[in-house]
Length: 226
Image (cartoon, rainbow, N blue to C red; front, side):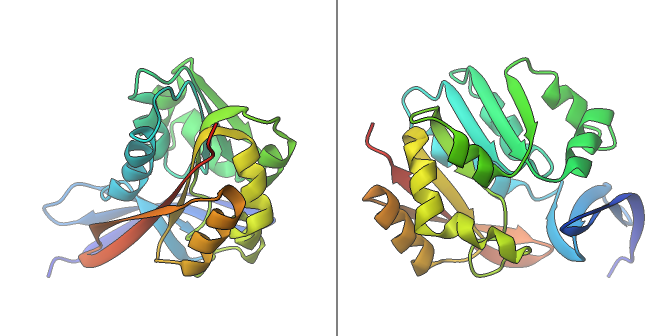
């Protein structure tokens, strides 16, 4: 087995803990950038199926996704996939961690400046729960939430409310067409909460290989009926 070498690219502290970018190098393979939060692996640049699927599955449900909200910037792959859809006129991307926003802007994440150069992007540094609470009715055509790992594998306990009926109902109020929530595992509780908030919910599963492990991720899709 080839030896893996790591090199830290950037590190920041926030009220929620430590955010780290690091390179992962394997002999004979390309360099991979990975994101870790409080020591927990979040995502990397080699397996982006999950982030892209969040966008493609959601966009396929919507006839006119003029204004899209992406909750969670991550490494930018969901945002980039949304921007690839020429029907989209504006994307509001909300990210709580200032460090991630800065690394995307200044090129620490090499692909970041090109993504943010798209004039349709509005990048907001804020809590997506607050943005959804303050948004008016039908502000967005499509809302995509990928803020944590889902209700059963939270990186930050304070994100638990994002998967509960009251906040999901506020998200639904702000969404004219479709609300989609990503989860690292199947969650009957999330399915029920979205059904209570919107009156309907459909679960979509998809398989990926992550660090040589087979994983199944989930998207929960609700139509807001407007």
